[in-house]
Image (cartoon, rainbow, N blue to C red; front, top):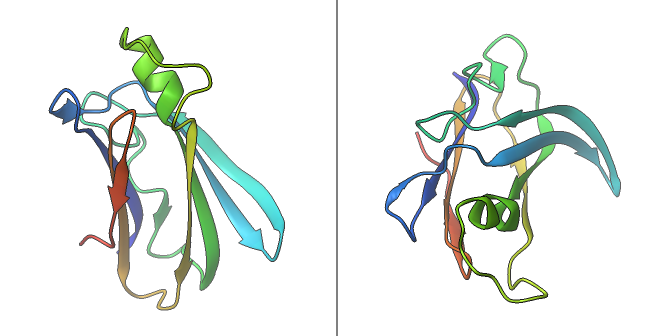
Length: 117
């Protein structure tokens, strides 16, 4: 149980190792940085869960993924300005006792997400 994320690079068909991600708690228009991290070789937080079961609270959160920075670092030629820069996902946690997995599938031109398990 808790909160986790995972990013897959759909352009290259691999985990998005090296992508920068930031996690925030939100309340209205206010966002408070909880942690920032670089995804590991598997496209996941190297420290494991973002919140474990005991720490996850009901409320609203934001994950910000540096999509443009990741693809630029991979040598992909991107137009200026980039179509996607940072992808921000705002989501809510209604049940502290459940697992919230927030995956991102990303290319320089598209992304999708869902609540995983």
